[in-house]
Length: 300
Image 1 (tube, one colour):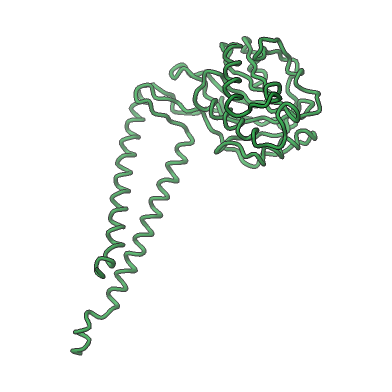
Image 2 (image 1 turned 135 degrees about the vertical axis):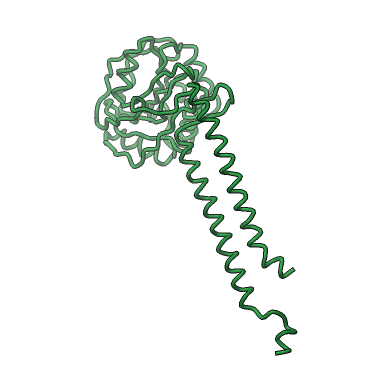
């Protein structure tokens, strides 16, 4: 039994090493499959500068742009400002079931946990980048989100889902807030990042809030308070989460942020392997320092 314990680190190390080999073999196969998919032009593999985020802190957005709200009314952006409360803007589209839905759900969760009340203390504008989106789509998306996370009556009056048939007007707002996006013909979806713009009551850009593992409610609260006071903040970190692209054949998902996950995964495996190697060598050293047997010691 003692010898078994001495050999245990070596056994564990060997198992870890074999696990690492299996991981790399699987990763190599996945990369090969991804390359094959890329070469067949199923999905674009590069994220270009056209969908980057360019921050315009302190700039005012054009309040004269007109949209249609989720009730079918023609509205101006200026209708939501000048009320002594800050405004959050997100840019999405209503047929996106991946990042857009995740972003809006996570934002709703954070808002639900705030002491500040949506509709009373601040408002939210979700603007569709798809000129094909309709009032019906906007209304359904709003109803789903409010039913799941924000059931207070004030929330319905405070979160507005907007559409426009004019791509020029959509692009104008997107350029003003620094939101880059583009339509991909192959995947038949928009490629974009996930973020929220906080604006002062006068329509000046106060801060950018980027989604990581959701939205931090404390950070969101301070962002709203500062924006409500007309303060212009700065971005502490900038992690862009790009819309996941679905492989048509495999039904898998890929995104640039997944590369970061892969790197951390490999570093973790190397750390575990090194840890087992250290204890295995330590065990071998201890075994060589001990006398062979009590009988041999007595004979000497």
